[in-house]
Length: 366
Image 1 (tube, rainbow, N blue to C red):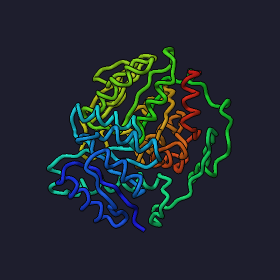
Image 2: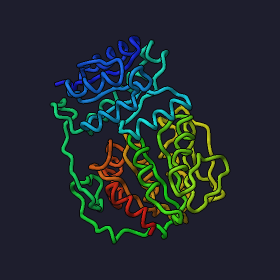
Image 3: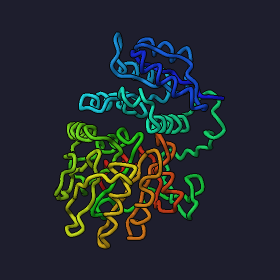
Image 4: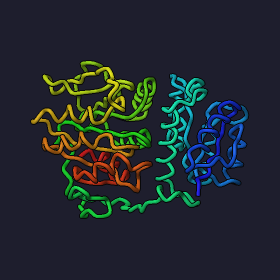
C-alpha cells in the first residue's frame, strides 16, 4: 500500500510538479494538497498522511507555524522545501527547530525540468523519512523493518555484522572519559541539526576538547547554523576557515559545499578544500575522518549521529585501525539510522548510545 502524502504549497506550479513527482514513485501517493498552513493543519488531522511536504512562505499561516501546530497534535515526518539563500537557511533551521524532519532545496528550474537529480533527492528523502517513521498506515514491504529500542542503554558492538539488537550491553560508566581524547569529531546528516543542537547546548563552557563537525548542509546553511549555535551554546561555535587552529571548547563546523580536513603537517590545523565532483557529499564525513586517521598519534573520539546513507562508515574504519574510539547514536533516537547503522554493521562502533545519554555525557564533560 502506497504511503499517503500531503503536499502544502501556495504555488500552483510547485504543487503540480511535486504531486507529479510523488505519484510517479509508486511507493507514495498524494492524498491531498493545501494552499497554506492553516489548511495544512486541518488536512493533516482529517487525512492522516504518512508524510507532509511543506513550503515555508505562504499567506494566512506560514509553514513554520504549521509545522509546530501539526507536531503538537501528532508525530508525522515533515519535509520542508527551502531556497538556497541566507533567508532560506534561517527559515529552514527555524522549521527544523519546530519539528520538521528534513529539508530539500527547491528552485523553479530544477522542478520545471524535473531532472533526475531532483527526482532522486526527493525520493531518497521520502524513503528515509517514512522508513524511520512509526506510520499508522501500512508501508510497502521494502520499507518495513524491525526497530530495536534501547532507551538510554549503552551497547558495545562486536563483529562485522553486529546490529544494535545483537550487541552486548555495556555500562555507561565504563566508557572512556572525554578528557582522555585530543579531539571530538561529529558526523551527521538528516536529523543532525537537532541532534547537534541538543548536544552542544547541554555542555558547560569548560568542555575539555575541540569539536569538529561535518554535517551535510549546503552553503549559506552552515554559516547560519554556526551563528545560531554560537548564540545558544556556552561554547564558541564557528564555521571553519582555512588555517583554523584547534582550541579547547571551540566548535568548528565544516563549511557547506566544501571539504574540511586536518593539515598533514600541523595536527592542530584545519584546511578548507574545494569540493571534488567524485564525492557525493560536501562536506563529507569520510573525508574529515580519513584525514584525522592519518595521524597515528591523534586520540580521536568520533561520533556518528543520525543521518541518511552511509557517509562516515569508511572513515570510521580508518580511525578504528588507527586506534581511535567510535561512538554512534542509537536507532531509537535517530531520525534516520542510515549513517550510525552502517558503522555498527561494519563492526567499527565501540558503543551505541541514545541521544539522551550522549547529552548527559556532554553535560558532565568527563
